[in-house]
Length: 289
Length: 279
Ligand SMILES: Nc1ncnc2c1ncn2[C@@H]1O[C@H](COP(=O)(O)OP(=O)(O)OP(=O)(O)O)[C@@H](O)[C@H]1O
Ligand SMILES: Nc1ncnc2c1ncn2[C@@H]1O[C@H](COP(=O)(O)OP(=O)(O)OP(=O)(O)O)[C@@H](O)[C@H]1O
Ligand SMILES: [Mg+2]
Ligand SMILES: [Mg+2]
Image 1: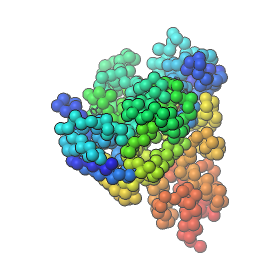
Image 2 (image 1 turned 135 degrees about the vertical axis):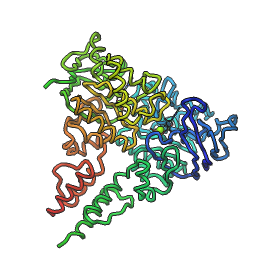
Image 3 (image 1 turned 180 degrees about the horizontal axis):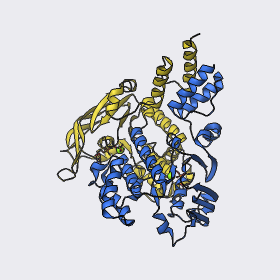
Image 4 (image 1 turned 90 degrees about the horizontal axis):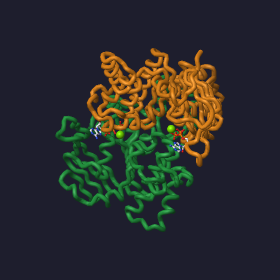
């Protein structure tokens, strides 16, 4: 499902003293099967933007096209259930999407709601739990009697069980332990590759945007401030600075090494051992005799 | 020196059918210390914070705050001196506006009105939320909620500050700014600080690091020594900062030597410079 934002603006609590314009004239295009990262400072409009893709929020102005669905202010009455079956959203706070008495019922809720055959349910649940590295002892627990990171994993499992065509992730790794962050990002990437899943990731970890995304959108103050391939975005230091963002660790480290040692390292997705090798080789070459 | 928080042979489980989360758990945190608690999901970090704050009560063992044993009768009084930022800030909002939310804790502690107004202004400015005073806390962005939760707690000038992944949703720059503000306040007021975190950049700011594994202290160490046992850390679900990974590779393959593993770019460049000269 291709996704297109056309001149989208969104204002919260219109016509009240609290009215706040969170999105301003957004144009963006995401093709089926792309992996897109959306980054930006606190309050720049990322979560507001995501909620337009499955019709949780409707634009105040402009329109959003998701596959065959046209979402705008005037056509509130269309059947959004079909859309939500295909577009899965992992919310920024897992508590916002957990509500059943047990983890099992929570994960099954969406499946029932969208009439997935009962005989398939168990297999879907098992496979989703495995993807988030939870064992099946959690199934009978209340989702609210789990640690923060465990809750996050359940919320992700619930969305994955639906086999969505479009996966929307609002800071999915916040609260996960470091190994969990690594494993779960790789799992998302794998789904994206093997199932051609369109993936839209909001993240504060520039390394994740650099490593996984085909395209990055940088939001600043409700507008699209930059868009492009990761290498392109992260070479525009000044523009990033305007959006109050930093470079990914690995790039800033490589730049600093180049400056201090006169080396010529450039980023090509090196693993640490490969980068270490390059550093040593270049340092030895550069060394005055 | 006085001990700020002490756990003595503490046993805790959430209910009778559940396994023990903490079993004969002992921990001492001295006054004015800055301690990071790290560890895998479900290792017991938040449980420790909630016990220290008297929100949970152990089935056996004692918890002492500033040398006084926490009991049902003194918990309210003792909690006045403890500030806690929860893993989910939504669980702590009490005001209908951002301003009221900060005011609440101050009113509770009987701060005079004039000072209260000053503190509200200062703390909201420090977290960059001064323009949101009349907003509803529940209608803020994820990161703004964390900022307000931090402001509300900082404004009370606690003796002990417990931060449970308090900056997990902030952009890297916002996180750095806010951490440095917290540290300034810590220095000024000599606050004892416990930071629960998964962010290895955050622990750089601490004196001591406690690594939890399945309800037990796996390691009680300092930042400089934390990564000496990097294999052990990896085996319990933690990962290494890029600079440490690079340093390990340089040692392993190219005979470089690091006295301690570099935790940020500056330290890495410094170490590389020194060893490069020696080579
Ligand atoms: N329900 C609401 N009512 C009024 N204003 C809102 C509401 N939700 C968000 N806002 C405002 O809209 C702006 C954008 O919020 P949004 O949640 O989209 O930001 P974000 O980029 O996701 O930030 P973060 O990184 O902190 O999660 C913020 O200034 C926020 O205060
Ligand atoms: N309210 C609760 N009721 C029952 N069990 C709980 C509750 N909260 C946590 N637990 C369990 O207690 C254990 C420790 O949880 P705790 O929240 O202390 O972990 P944590 O180290 O903070 O993890 P995280 O990094 O995921 O936040 C976990 O196994 C968790 O499932
Ligand atoms: Mg958000
Ligand atoms: Mg926790």
